[in-house]
Length: 600
Image (cartoon, rainbow, N blue to C red):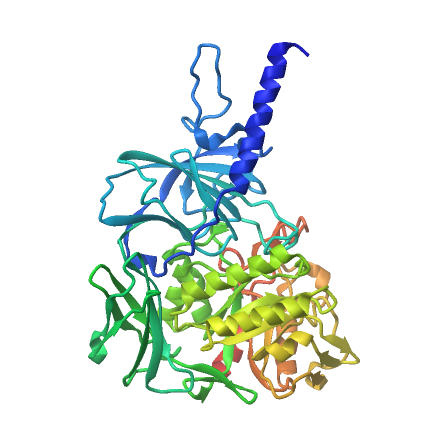
């Protein structure tokens, strides 16, 4: 080996070791402030330059340093100048044809100008990046975040510089064995900076978090708290609800926390009357406004009670996908499209599967009178024996609850979907997670979705060890599709563990291609609407036999993209279980559910 080659290899090895040390020594993202829409924010949305990195070599090349040739003999094998541009927010899969099925690294860059103010603090807030994000500002690594569906932020008060600043984000959507979700799942793995990015300016002490909601079981009493962030945490805090003539003044303690308790007469939020009140929280250095509805949700015996009255949950499942565009949904317009169809179906609840959806979905549901079931991406084959997975579940739960704690539309926290009793450490881990959830928020229902029931001789045996920890027994069953009927639907018998709890059928249905009329109508392999329609007719007959039935949710509203659906004629990369096609065409099964919900 000649001396020049040895020097090059030594330098490259040193760069690799340095980059590994930088990654290992970098802090994780900070917990995000809530209610970004009410902050002094500057949007960083728009077009960002990108470098595609399918081999993952960008880390070794230290792309975040944006090296330039210094000598005439120097060259650099990457550049953001002249590179493709992608829209943020948005997934990269739907924006470039060569990235349609891509799972790997894409580097994003955005330049912005800023004039620092010594009396202000500055944060870069990401509403979500899927899945791993490494964030750099002006060549310095701010930190990392794992999880594709929850917000995070970095304070850059002392790192920002006057004039032009360069923000670079390494995004990696590769599936991980110990990720959440794991290696296998039934939807398109949209990667990229999929939700809003904002610069947020605050005072030196700002309102970081708060909780304002009716006390469980009470009609008039409100309990809550406000948390400040800053060097001077002990401040006078005012809470106002102008329409109710509520004005409350409290003092925060040395940790920046102030407890709230007051009473008032509310018009309660419900699907029939989605009333929201303007709530103002202010200190001498910060003011935040929110729209909050007041309601209670609880289980009494085997009934679900909204505001003290029994309610039947008329649901549907929705993925965070704009079906017309075949892209990740993120905007208010996307939310109106999806939720508007749920309303037309007659729903009063939407299960936002299988991960926390964007804030526009939750807030628009609140305005439209739709209850929300929000879910962690603890989906099927999770590695519960991996301690890293347990830490990730804990973090994602806290990020999910923190963001939507004040959204009255959210009535159910779902902590897992289709996990299995025999999986090592599964029940212990999810039982502990349930306990944490109840400590974080005792005002909502908690559930785990299972599909481990046995169906034999036209009889269901419904059992799972997780049921003892859940408020609802939630189960997915696809009788008539994956499993044939073993008798008449109206003659199904049930043996349900914990018979004192309400039962929710969280998934059911079958696939059909809209407009398809080839093959026999009574054969599943025909993919005809008539076959799907008959599944729904039979399911509704069976529901009459289901004990303690508190609600149902067909799988699902729209056909959606999923790479595991490989039939070249009928699926073409889509899960066809939708009541609507990806173009919004109503299948015959739609009208069966619409009629059922009108009767309920």
